[in-house]
Image 1: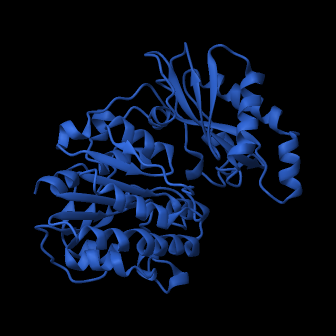
Image 2 (image 1 turned 90 degrees about the vertical axis):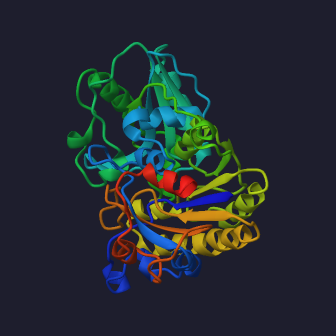
Length: 395
């Protein structure tokens, strides 16, 4: 049996006035997702437990068949695995965004999707300026970086993801709790360093958002998870441009397949991801294809870019992969977002997501196109996210 899971990150949404009351999924041309929904079945799945924050970390862990209540230690530790950053038992690691603030408000969680080349200069200079043996900054991709702090306890600190608080006053979302003063001091030092930095002068001249600050959040300690092959008996691989998903894949023992031109944005190499997934089927039992572009469009509040991303996923990934799978005697394909990222709210929410599942032994129930409304109408509900993987592989 061959399995493929395709995750259009954050694709689920609410009805949009600009699309005549349709959701982005309903408005998008998705003949291949629709075919999967009608060949097989669609339903809804709650990937985020009620007591947990609706981040991609929790949602993707659940989607992959792991209970976040058991395995989740924070977002940053997962990304540290992706970057091969060793963590000691007493180390704490934070996600470190390069962000844009103005008028004491969070304006842009990504500083205009700053380039990695520019970002690495800023992060390296900040690391030298802080100059503490107990603090180390690590460059990631674009605006996404990490900060490791030794010798302090941050178990009582509360931090906030900047992408969920666009336009919010900084005083309401800065770190708080025991030892938060240390984090806020690091943030304040970054503001001083970046204020008149040459990179920001150029960015302002070009009309681009400057980097005004770092933002520390998503903290946690060293992560570990049971291997997927031991838990489910399948050998897997993942295709993604995002460190969070790369880290999860490594934690569960999936091989990583790199695709040239995979960016995590609307300009990503959709076709390359589809081709890589098809090639991987010869070697692996299960292939995960994660595409970040719909989520980024949701955070940007742009329904048209989100629609374009979903249509590209359908055309260049879902269609070719579904066609290739049908050359195997037994297969199953699952298409689902990890969580909704509504363009009006510009943040993740914890509502159930639609999914479409087709292949060997899957009986069709509702012969309607794939979308939120029809998935709810199907009456097929997975209330506990990890149970969907059990259904995919074992039922």
